[in-house]
Length: 303
Image (cartoon, rainbow, N blue to C red):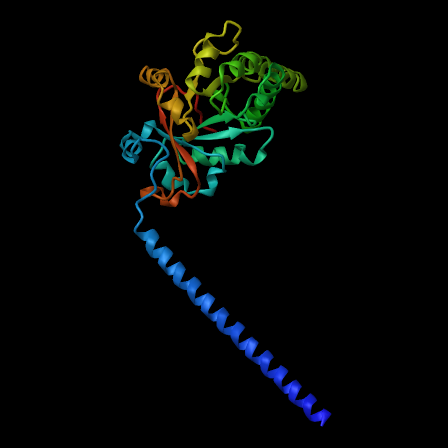
């Protein structure tokens, strides 16, 4: 009698487990079906959305309408990762970086030769952070000046061409006076010290100098140019920065006046994922679209 009850109990347990497994399997099928349905609906929804809008109010047609010799881009990735043949049909120059803290974004000689081979010029920026006052001081200006001279010389950048030093945030006046101005006052000294050290090591072989420029918003640019202690050239190369987060600054009368006077070398139009519209679809990397304000912008080609 006990054995019969045990067998019945075991059979009931087996039946319960089988039923539970069936329920779980059915639920899994329902969930998968719902996920597939949601994906189809999401794709359908995306197809009806308008094209992505630029980060500011400048229409996309503004960039396309510029003469090709005024168009440029800047990017923090190796430009060889994109289609340089396609890009060369759209822009006349590419902005790239030197950095002693982020070698991944740094221009190399092979990359520079590839850009030049495709008929585009190169503009370079130096940026180690540069998004807060912690990136600026007299000591850092001298050290960064030396570091960037060595990087530029190793790449083969021609003498007397520009290197734009970045101030990549809308700095308040206290930061400008206490940190950024001392930084720019000592850049030239650092670059010259590095040049002289190289000449000594190479038994007085010739080595050229580079022209330090400014990448910043109007308040910083104006303060540096007006600084009586500045060591930059009398008419330095100027890149008028305008990242999307600076929109309030961009709407200011000061910014509009500075832009209207065209005292700038180049202007950052907007941040955009180039490569998802029109002929940019083949380029293959994110970048900023820029306008060249003056023919003399310190750009160069490598040979």
